[in-house]
Image (cartoon, rainbow, N blue to C red):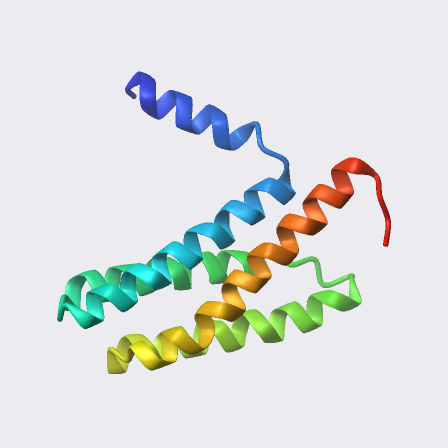
Length: 125
């Protein structure tokens, strides 16, 4: 493992779980934007890879849900909806579908980011 790889691994493992979730959503937003660009440039492999990476993020988030909390049911449904739309976008190579879910995914990122900041500061709303 190179020094850079060690640094990256250490950086991620030192993050709180909330910060890790925010990073996952940030990467999902980036991947969707890339997939849209790849569709527009007719790069089928790039499109597929970007969408699959995003699907993997949402599958991880689904697997990580603690179903003992009532909000987990809602998140499960939402994450499943997004995963289904990503699958359809990948099958059809349809940027319109990606543009439909992109604001939702980025809004989830922003919501998790705010929740993480509030939890660290101890502020409750």
